[in-house]
Length: 152
Image (cartoon, rainbow, N blue to C red; front, side, top):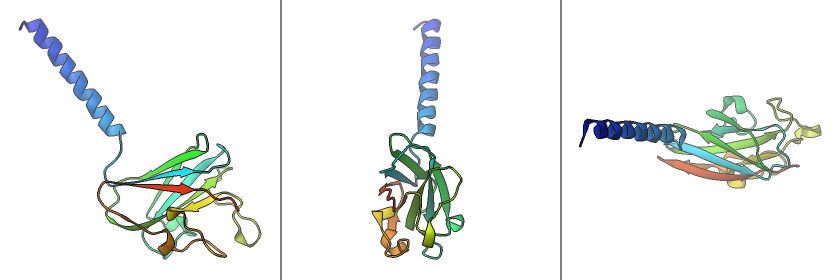
């Protein structure tokens, strides 16, 4: 091997390592909860997601959630991801913030004007779903969830 071919091989190795590191940093995260949301009636606004670890504030007190995520909408679909989440029992609430005001807009008696959803596609009876109905187990790695948005 000549010095020139060794240099070229070295440059190629450096480039490949850089590409691999970049792909790893933008790829899926370890210990993550990935939520795929469908059934959105438009691509307007954003989807806001909240991760809860107990029933205490689920789902009404999103500011008390363990973690928050938001997503843009494309073709009636959105994805929220919570990273570095330890193993445990959790529930997720989501809503379609159509006017991007950062809050769930409601009608008379607190009925949502915007689409809502929860993990396990749990639904409430005369109110939001209960934590136990939406609860799921997360362990190391990535937990994938699918939530369908409901408009009331």
